[in-house]
Amino acid sequence: MGFEGDEESAANQVPTKSRFRYNSPLVQITLIGLVCFCCPGMFNALSGMGGGGQVNPTAANNANTALYTTFAIFGVLGGGIYNILGPRLTLAAGCSTYVLYAGSFLYYNHKQDQSFAIVAGAVLGIGAGFLWAGEGAIMTSYPPPHRKGTYISLFWSIFNMGGVIGGLIPFILNYNRSEAASVNDGTYIGFMCFMTAGTLLSLAILPPSKVVRDDGTRCTNIKYSKVSTEAVEIGKLFFNWKMLLIAPAAWASNFFYSYQFNNVNGALFNLRTRGLNNVFYWGAQMVGSVGIGYILDFSFQSRRKRGFVGIGIVAALGTAIWAGGLAKQVGYKHNDLPPKLDFKDSGSDFAGPFVLYFSYGLLDAMFQSMVYWVIGALADDSEILSRYVGFYKGVQSAGAAVAWQVDAHKVPLLSQLIVNWSLTTVSYPLLATLVMLAVKDDHEGEEPSINPASMDNNSKPV
Image 1 (cartoon, rainbow, N blue to C red):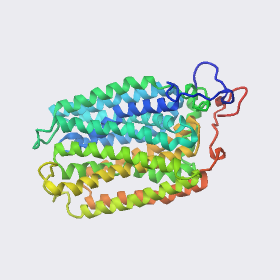
Image 2 (image 1 turned 90 degrees about the vertical axis):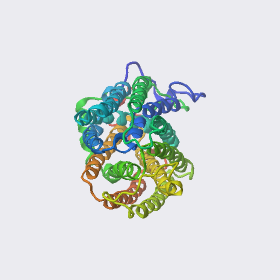
Image 3 (image 1 turned 60 degrees about the vertical axis):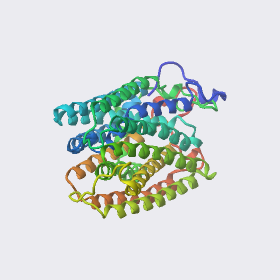
Image 4 (image 1 turned 90 degrees about the horizontal axis):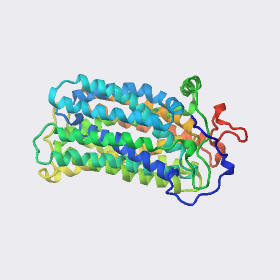
């Protein structure tokens, strides 16, 4: 992936004082955070309502299965597409599909026909593959190597503010509808407006060759890749031992959403309270990402030691949270649900399930931020990292496609919880092994780009 004009060698760059330059990593990460605030952030708020805000989750389950099936394919391909098209076209194409998805549920509110929602879900899967491959390449390659955790937490906080604001939309618009089963039209229209804004904002993202770090270096210096090159390199990912160690964490990282959204938030709370819960679920993600980002960047001088400590903390916290979920889950089943809780009317009965759902959001952000940090520590080139992140998102989406059908087929809730807990637990020692074998305390552990086009006449691959 490259761009017109002669590129200066990183060695010729001079330190730049202002961090708030348009072409600085800080501004660009903030912009991609705002894009994801508007598009997947609002999508998360919609999904977090349980059943897409509908009384019957069947349409949302089937739409999400279609979504994550195509996402699994285009998530893997997305890194190569990003390397060919560049960030603006890739991101804008991906963002536009979110508007269609929200519109399909507005249609469903009137026609009760899930066909449009399923087709829109499949189209969104393609677009999400584009968006998240581009986002991952930007988030892991634009920041300086020693501050990737900080920039990941910055992105994650801005992105999840979308879920917070998105949770407020159905909460406010449905506040006086305590007995309502489905959200009103204004909720979906509000989501669509934000998603449209995100699509336009994606055009402000700069290509990596235009981004200059504070020390004067550019994050990468490459030209357009070729379809044949990307096809070969994507194929190699499935035999890359580093990606194989990441695969279980990738599969687990979205597998739990169907359980948490439909069978915790959707099953235990009424409509308006589900909206309020989402405000805190995604707010918890902001807290979790900042906390784990600090640990992964500042806790120790050794990058490898920081990785071990971060994985250990997430593992310990995850064990405690899933154990709390188990204690709650043994009290209800699909055919034996408790009365719906309301944040105003249920008194102290509301507190425990609310804290549990909040904790699930905290763990999600810490887990995914940790995995992104590990991926970012494997290389420092956007061409390589776009493929790595694309592989991660592809496997992640394949797991999610399976998970939504698991829920659609009414697999016992206790079994769903145990599977989710087991998947995340298995991933911790594998990630620790990857950190031990592949993450170095200096630049020797970072892979150079293999694309011959990455080299200019005077410099080695950046």
